[in-house]
Image (cartoon, rainbow, N blue to C red):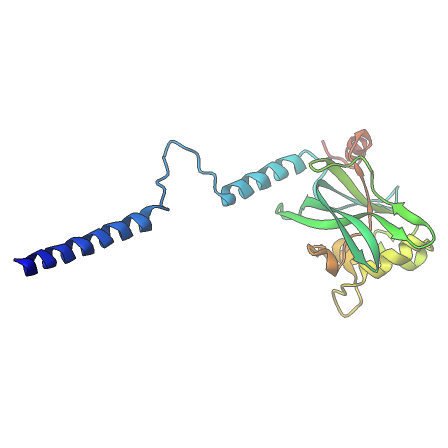
Length: 219
């Protein structure tokens, strides 16, 4: 009799352990209610991308254009986060989302300003820019041509520094840097700022951009 009781107790103990293990294994599983929206990170990212694309499609134009009268290359983007990096000199950068020529969403980093020895902080971006703003990113001046930029034609300290940043990453055996690769070949500028970034000017898009779009023939 005692032996049967011990066997029964052992069986009950084993069954109890199995039940406990099943409860623990299933405690982290949640059944998604079909009536509730899915809020996974992947869906959030895609929704954010759609919002950015919709906003960029309202810009005066998509992609990079040369404005011959102004001697200027310009594209439009949406401002993202800001970051400070110390690459040759301390730079303040902004992340810029833009549309590539095939319509795909991409991003790069553009300088807002830099600390130059003897001059202090030199701003090349609009101080009013906030995340989510539609912005114009441009490169203009006597050193800018339809064929690209010739940094040596600009004598300012900022241009000399910009040339060093622009050629940190050499893209071919001709010595093509980031800016000329972007202009001539449509190569995407770096997405990691320690490989370099665009030393262009940044400002909020405004009515002058709408005028430029009309002059360029956009309806």
